[in-house]
Length: 289
Image 1 (cartoon, rainbow, N blue to C red):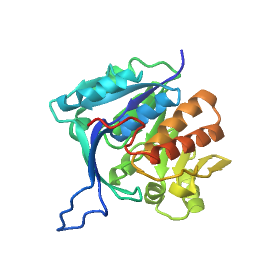
Image 2 (tube, rainbow, N blue to C red):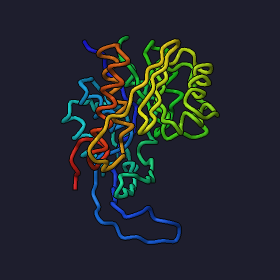
Image 3 (cartoon, helix red, strand yellow):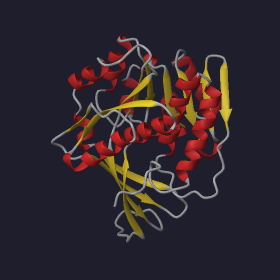
Image 4 (cartoon, rainbow, N blue to C red):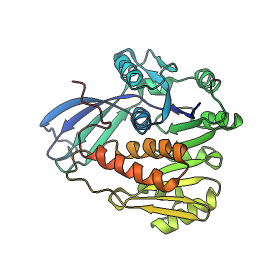
C-alpha cells in the first residue's frame, strides 16, 4: 500500500471580499464582490496532496455549519473518518483581496481548536510505518502530535504557519521536514538574508529538511550538504495569492513521497503555487456561493 499523509489540520470557510485597498482603522469600505470558498491551511494542503497524486487522511473538527466541507473532501478521495463535528462553529477567515492579488486575512479557529488527544491517538493507531504526518500551526496539540507520531516511528512535516511565539516551544528537532516562508524563517532563525537564515536553522535543526518559500524569488530546499534553489514559475496574471503556500506544501510533500527526489518536488510545488495565484480562492475548487 502507498504511504498515506495524515494531515492534522484546519478546515475553514473563507469569506473573500474584493476591495480597492485594504481597510484602514476607522474606515468603512464597500467590497466589489463577495464569495465563499473552502479554506484553512489544513484543508488546502489536503486538497493539494490528492491533486498531486498523494493519499491523504484529514484529521480535525468542523462545526455543523461546515459539514459540506467534509463531503467535499470525501468526494476528492480524502479519508474523512477522523474529521468530526464539534459544537463550536467551523473555523473561518475574513479575506480582503486587492486588484493586484494581495490579501489581508483575519481567522477564527472555532472548531479547529477542539480536537482532543484521544482523537489524535485514534487516528495515529491506524498508521503503518511508511505513513507521514503533516501539521500546520492553526490547531492545538501540535507538540503532542509531533511526539506521538515520532513514538510510532512516523515521519513528521510541520508548516509553521501562522507563526507565533509558541512555535519555538515545540519539539522542532524531532521534525523530518519544516516548511517556512521567508518571514517565518526570519522570525525562527532570528536573522535575515537567505544564506544566513539557512545557516542558522541548519545549526539549530541539523536532522531536519528545510523548505523555505520566497514568494516571487522562488523557493529553497536544504538538508545537510545539499541546497537546491527553484525559481518561481511565471503566471500571466496574479489574481489572488491566498493559499499559494498551501498548494506548495501539499504538492511538495506528495511528490517527495512518490519520487524521493527533492528537485522534482520543488518544481512541481512551484507549478502548483503558480496555478493557485492565477485564480480566486485558496484551492482549485470553485466558489461555493
